[in-house]
Length: 273
Ligand code: MN
Image (tube, rainbow, N blue to C red; front, side):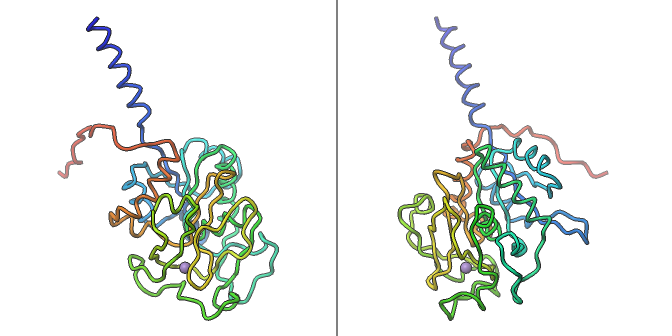
């Protein structure tokens, strides 16, 4: 009898350990054709680690099958920041104040995002990732806030100080996932964008705005498993800020993971001879 109980307990412990495996969180990377590089700021990597996920950098996908293959292997996706979105994707000519665009990266990020939605993998869009999400699902952008946003003057959305310093506030809609996570109606955020959402894509709702009216966050629940924000919480999460780590933990939880589990395998430091 005792043996049976021990056996059952062992099976139960194994099942728990399996259920608790850390999820793989794919992070889209920047792509430079001239430099022939893929890269992403380390803030994203550390934020995922601090939230209990395993970060996996995703290089530019050169076709939709490559995007589908990598998305099928990860449990969640972060669309990282970067260049302006190519305006042809939302039916506009390029305004004179449009910044540099990266057609190949836009296409790759759209493939990653659309596959993630198809496979119901959760997505967190950050900055450009928020804008690209909106465009992918049929929304539009202000190509340049200072010259195009109707309510002027606008706040400083392209901050000239360190990313670890909040520069403006956002008002959070109470009936939202963002509020559920943060439990605050107002958040102090950093800001590194000169573009912003104009028309919100069907299926998404605005869940945060800056005091000047600039849209700062959208979410697609329940139709789309996507939260997308205009600021960069990874700067704060990298520094161990528990409040902002919650935003990444939410992605980890949506990706089916929970907190720790594996024992340290105690592999020795590489030896210097
Ligand atoms: Mn802003």
